[in-house]
Length: 299
Image (tube, rainbow, N blue to C red):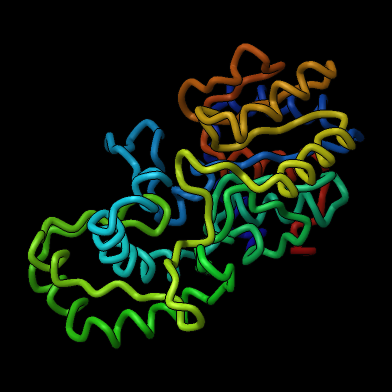
Protein backbone atom coordinates (compact mmCIF):
# COMPACT_ATOMS: atom_id res chain seq x y z
CA UNK A 1 0.00 0.00 0.00
CA UNK A 2 2.84 2.40 0.80
CA UNK A 3 4.27 1.81 -2.66
CA UNK A 4 0.98 2.55 -4.40
CA UNK A 5 0.44 5.81 -2.52
CA UNK A 6 3.95 7.10 -3.04
CA UNK A 7 4.30 6.11 -6.67
CA UNK A 8 1.09 7.98 -7.41
CA UNK A 9 2.33 11.05 -5.55
CA UNK A 10 5.65 11.05 -7.37
CA UNK A 11 3.84 11.21 -10.70
CA UNK A 12 2.58 14.71 -9.74
CA UNK A 13 6.01 16.36 -9.89
CA UNK A 14 6.62 19.14 -12.41
CA UNK A 15 9.20 18.52 -15.17
CA UNK A 16 11.72 20.89 -13.59
CA UNK A 17 11.33 19.16 -10.23
CA UNK A 18 11.89 15.77 -11.83
CA UNK A 19 15.11 17.00 -13.46
CA UNK A 20 16.34 18.35 -10.11
CA UNK A 21 15.55 15.05 -8.44
CA UNK A 22 17.54 13.18 -11.08
CA UNK A 23 20.50 15.39 -10.22
CA UNK A 24 19.94 14.70 -6.52
CA UNK A 25 19.79 10.95 -7.22
CA UNK A 26 23.07 11.18 -9.14
CA UNK A 27 24.71 12.81 -6.11
CA UNK A 28 23.30 10.32 -3.61
CA UNK A 29 23.54 7.12 -5.62
CA UNK A 30 25.97 4.75 -3.96
CA UNK A 31 26.68 7.23 -1.16
CA UNK A 32 25.35 6.54 2.35
CA UNK A 33 23.57 9.68 3.50
CA UNK A 34 21.86 11.01 6.60
CA UNK A 35 18.26 12.22 6.42
CA UNK A 36 17.13 15.22 8.49
CA UNK A 37 13.37 15.79 8.50
CA UNK A 38 11.15 18.58 9.79
CA UNK A 39 7.52 19.57 10.12
CA UNK A 40 7.05 19.93 6.36
CA UNK A 41 7.17 16.14 6.12
CA UNK A 42 4.13 15.70 8.37
CA UNK A 43 1.79 18.38 7.01
CA UNK A 44 0.33 15.84 4.57
CA UNK A 45 -0.64 13.80 7.64
CA UNK A 46 -2.75 16.72 8.87
CA UNK A 47 -0.24 18.02 11.43
CA UNK A 48 0.31 21.81 11.14
CA UNK A 49 3.79 23.29 11.07
CA UNK A 50 5.17 26.51 12.54
CA UNK A 51 6.86 28.09 9.54
CA UNK A 52 5.56 26.56 6.31
CA UNK A 53 4.17 28.72 3.48
CA UNK A 54 0.61 28.28 4.79
CA UNK A 55 1.36 28.31 8.52
CA UNK A 56 -0.47 30.84 10.65
CA UNK A 57 1.80 33.18 12.66
CA UNK A 58 2.09 32.01 16.26
CA UNK A 59 4.25 32.47 19.34
CA UNK A 60 4.99 29.07 20.89
CA UNK A 61 5.13 28.63 24.65
CA UNK A 62 8.72 28.58 25.88
CA UNK A 63 10.25 26.19 28.39
CA UNK A 64 10.78 29.05 30.83
CA UNK A 65 7.11 30.10 30.60
CA UNK A 66 5.86 26.54 31.03
CA UNK A 67 8.03 25.92 34.08
CA UNK A 68 7.53 29.31 35.71
CA UNK A 69 3.83 30.16 35.29
CA UNK A 70 1.07 27.87 36.67
CA UNK A 71 -1.61 29.68 34.64
CA UNK A 72 0.30 29.16 31.40
CA UNK A 73 0.73 25.48 32.29
CA UNK A 74 -3.01 25.23 32.88
CA UNK A 75 -3.68 26.80 29.50
CA UNK A 76 -1.14 24.52 27.86
CA UNK A 77 -2.56 21.28 29.26
CA UNK A 78 -6.14 22.28 28.44
CA UNK A 79 -5.13 22.81 24.82
CA UNK A 80 -2.88 19.76 24.74
CA UNK A 81 -5.72 17.56 25.97
CA UNK A 82 -7.55 18.53 22.78
CA UNK A 83 -4.57 18.41 20.40
CA UNK A 84 -3.41 15.03 21.72
CA UNK A 85 -6.40 13.21 20.26
CA UNK A 86 -5.76 14.74 16.84
CA UNK A 87 -2.07 13.80 16.86
CA UNK A 88 -2.95 10.29 17.97
CA UNK A 89 -5.10 9.85 14.86
CA UNK A 90 -2.42 11.04 12.42
CA UNK A 91 -1.09 8.41 10.01
CA UNK A 92 2.20 8.22 8.08
CA UNK A 93 2.12 9.74 4.61
CA UNK A 94 4.07 9.02 1.44
CA UNK A 95 7.14 10.84 2.73
CA UNK A 96 7.37 8.74 5.88
CA UNK A 97 7.07 5.53 3.88
CA UNK A 98 9.72 6.80 1.48
CA UNK A 99 12.09 7.53 4.37
CA UNK A 100 11.53 4.01 5.70
CA UNK A 101 12.23 2.62 2.22
CA UNK A 102 15.50 4.55 2.08
CA UNK A 103 16.48 3.07 5.44
CA UNK A 104 15.45 -0.50 4.59
CA UNK A 105 17.21 -0.20 1.24
CA UNK A 106 20.52 0.56 2.95
CA UNK A 107 20.81 4.13 1.64
CA UNK A 108 20.83 5.87 5.03
CA UNK A 109 23.19 6.15 7.97
CA UNK A 110 20.10 7.14 9.93
CA UNK A 111 17.12 9.49 10.24
CA UNK A 112 17.24 12.61 12.41
CA UNK A 113 13.79 14.10 12.86
CA UNK A 114 12.77 17.37 14.46
CA UNK A 115 9.19 16.09 14.61
CA UNK A 116 7.67 14.64 17.77
CA UNK A 117 4.85 12.72 16.06
CA UNK A 118 6.61 9.31 15.82
CA UNK A 119 5.31 8.84 12.25
CA UNK A 120 8.72 7.69 11.01
CA UNK A 121 8.51 4.76 13.39
CA UNK A 122 4.88 4.11 12.47
CA UNK A 123 5.95 3.86 8.83
CA UNK A 124 8.55 1.19 9.67
CA UNK A 125 11.78 3.13 10.20
CA UNK A 126 13.89 1.97 13.13
CA UNK A 127 17.17 3.91 13.10
CA UNK A 128 15.62 7.23 14.11
CA UNK A 129 16.74 9.98 16.47
CA UNK A 130 13.68 11.84 17.76
CA UNK A 131 15.77 14.97 18.24
CA UNK A 132 13.05 17.00 19.93
CA UNK A 133 11.50 14.10 21.83
CA UNK A 134 8.13 12.42 21.44
CA UNK A 135 4.55 13.50 21.96
CA UNK A 136 3.38 10.12 23.28
CA UNK A 137 5.20 10.40 26.63
CA UNK A 138 5.23 12.78 29.57
CA UNK A 139 7.98 13.19 32.14
CA UNK A 140 7.93 14.31 35.76
CA UNK A 141 10.29 17.24 36.28
CA UNK A 142 10.72 16.15 39.91
CA UNK A 143 11.39 12.41 40.02
CA UNK A 144 12.01 12.06 36.22
CA UNK A 145 9.56 9.15 35.96
CA UNK A 146 7.90 8.88 32.55
CA UNK A 147 4.30 8.00 31.71
CA UNK A 148 2.52 7.29 28.47
CA UNK A 149 0.38 10.09 27.11
CA UNK A 150 -2.43 7.52 26.85
CA UNK A 151 -2.33 7.14 30.63
CA UNK A 152 -2.29 10.90 31.17
CA UNK A 153 -5.30 11.27 28.86
CA UNK A 154 -7.27 8.98 31.17
CA UNK A 155 -6.17 10.96 34.22
CA UNK A 156 -7.03 14.32 32.64
CA UNK A 157 -10.41 13.02 31.50
CA UNK A 158 -11.17 11.87 35.04
CA UNK A 159 -10.05 15.21 36.48
CA UNK A 160 -12.07 17.16 33.89
CA UNK A 161 -15.34 15.31 33.25
CA UNK A 162 -17.27 16.71 30.29
CA UNK A 163 -14.41 19.01 29.21
CA UNK A 164 -14.03 17.66 25.66
CA UNK A 165 -17.79 17.67 25.14
CA UNK A 166 -17.95 21.29 26.34
CA UNK A 167 -15.11 22.23 23.99
CA UNK A 168 -16.95 20.69 21.06
CA UNK A 169 -20.15 22.54 21.97
CA UNK A 170 -18.31 25.85 22.37
CA UNK A 171 -16.54 25.58 19.01
CA UNK A 172 -13.70 27.95 18.20
CA UNK A 173 -11.02 25.26 18.26
CA UNK A 174 -8.31 24.66 15.68
CA UNK A 175 -5.39 22.23 15.76
CA UNK A 176 -1.89 23.67 16.24
CA UNK A 177 1.62 22.17 15.96
CA UNK A 178 3.10 19.74 18.49
CA UNK A 179 -0.16 18.36 19.93
CA UNK A 180 -1.38 21.86 20.75
CA UNK A 181 -4.75 23.42 19.92
CA UNK A 182 -6.13 26.95 19.78
CA UNK A 183 -8.94 27.20 22.32
CA UNK A 184 -10.83 30.48 22.52
CA UNK A 185 -12.91 29.80 25.65
CA UNK A 186 -11.12 31.36 28.61
CA UNK A 187 -13.82 29.97 30.89
CA UNK A 188 -13.03 26.38 29.92
CA UNK A 189 -9.31 26.99 30.33
CA UNK A 190 -9.73 28.56 33.77
CA UNK A 191 -11.73 25.54 34.99
CA UNK A 192 -9.25 22.95 33.72
CA UNK A 193 -7.57 20.77 36.34
CA UNK A 194 -3.90 19.95 35.70
CA UNK A 195 -2.58 16.50 36.61
CA UNK A 196 0.40 15.93 38.90
CA UNK A 197 2.91 13.10 38.92
CA UNK A 198 1.19 10.05 40.47
CA UNK A 199 4.47 9.04 42.12
CA UNK A 200 5.76 12.23 43.72
CA UNK A 201 3.16 14.92 43.01
CA UNK A 202 5.63 16.78 40.81
CA UNK A 203 5.16 18.87 37.70
CA UNK A 204 4.45 16.92 34.50
CA UNK A 205 5.79 18.05 31.13
CA UNK A 206 5.43 16.58 27.63
CA UNK A 207 8.56 14.56 26.86
CA UNK A 208 9.64 16.83 24.04
CA UNK A 209 11.86 19.86 23.76
CA UNK A 210 10.16 23.23 24.21
CA UNK A 211 11.43 26.44 22.65
CA UNK A 212 14.23 27.71 24.88
CA UNK A 213 15.05 24.20 26.14
CA UNK A 214 18.22 22.32 25.25
CA UNK A 215 18.17 19.09 23.23
CA UNK A 216 19.59 16.25 25.37
CA UNK A 217 23.29 15.76 24.71
CA UNK A 218 22.99 12.04 23.89
CA UNK A 219 20.57 12.73 21.03
CA UNK A 220 22.83 15.41 19.59
CA UNK A 221 25.86 13.13 19.75
CA UNK A 222 24.03 10.25 18.08
CA UNK A 223 22.83 12.59 15.34
CA UNK A 224 26.34 13.87 14.70
CA UNK A 225 27.49 10.25 14.44
CA UNK A 226 24.94 9.72 11.66
CA UNK A 227 26.17 12.81 9.82
CA UNK A 228 29.83 11.89 10.33
CA UNK A 229 29.23 8.37 8.94
CA UNK A 230 27.44 9.80 5.89
CA UNK A 231 28.81 10.98 2.58
CA UNK A 232 25.99 13.52 2.21
CA UNK A 233 23.10 15.08 4.11
CA UNK A 234 19.52 15.27 2.81
CA UNK A 235 17.18 17.74 4.53
CA UNK A 236 13.46 17.21 3.91
CA UNK A 237 10.71 19.55 5.08
CA UNK A 238 12.62 21.79 7.49
CA UNK A 239 13.12 25.54 7.39
CA UNK A 240 16.20 25.01 9.61
CA UNK A 241 15.19 28.09 11.58
CA UNK A 242 16.46 26.72 14.88
CA UNK A 243 20.05 25.70 15.48
CA UNK A 244 19.08 22.21 16.65
CA UNK A 245 18.75 21.19 13.00
CA UNK A 246 20.91 23.79 11.28
CA UNK A 247 24.05 22.61 13.09
CA UNK A 248 24.02 19.35 11.13
CA UNK A 249 23.90 21.26 7.84
CA UNK A 250 26.82 23.42 8.96
CA UNK A 251 28.80 20.33 10.00
CA UNK A 252 28.20 18.54 6.69
CA UNK A 253 29.14 21.65 4.71
CA UNK A 254 32.26 22.17 6.83
CA UNK A 255 33.29 18.59 5.99
CA UNK A 256 32.73 19.29 2.27
CA UNK A 257 29.83 16.85 2.06
CA UNK A 258 26.94 17.56 -0.33
CA UNK A 259 23.89 19.10 1.36
CA UNK A 260 20.57 18.53 -0.40
CA UNK A 261 17.53 20.51 0.78
CA UNK A 262 13.95 19.70 -0.25
CA UNK A 263 11.59 22.26 1.23
CA UNK A 264 8.91 24.69 0.10
CA UNK A 265 10.19 28.13 1.02
CA UNK A 266 13.49 29.60 2.13
CA UNK A 267 15.63 27.86 4.76
CA UNK A 268 18.58 29.03 6.85
CA UNK A 269 20.63 26.27 5.27
CA UNK A 270 20.21 27.47 1.68
CA UNK A 271 23.67 29.12 1.55
CA UNK A 272 25.28 25.76 2.42
CA UNK A 273 23.16 23.68 0.03
CA UNK A 274 24.57 21.87 -2.96
CA UNK A 275 21.08 21.48 -4.43
CA UNK A 276 17.89 23.17 -3.20
CA UNK A 277 14.56 21.83 -4.46
CA UNK A 278 11.30 23.64 -3.67
CA UNK A 279 8.76 20.87 -4.07
CA UNK A 280 6.43 18.64 -2.09
CA UNK A 281 8.45 16.55 0.34
CA UNK A 282 6.42 13.35 0.10
CA UNK A 283 6.33 13.36 -3.69
CA UNK A 284 10.03 14.14 -3.91
CA UNK A 285 11.15 11.42 -1.51
CA UNK A 286 8.90 8.94 -3.26
CA UNK A 287 10.46 9.73 -6.62
CA UNK A 288 13.95 9.62 -5.11
CA UNK A 289 13.34 6.08 -3.86
CA UNK A 290 12.37 5.07 -7.39
CA UNK A 291 15.41 6.77 -8.94
CA UNK A 292 17.71 4.99 -6.49
CA UNK A 293 16.15 1.67 -7.46
CA UNK A 294 15.00 0.73 -3.95
CA UNK A 295 12.18 -1.70 -3.18
CA UNK A 296 9.20 0.01 -1.50
CA UNK A 297 7.70 -3.30 -0.46
CA UNK A 298 10.34 -3.72 2.22
CA UNK A 299 8.46 -1.12 4.28
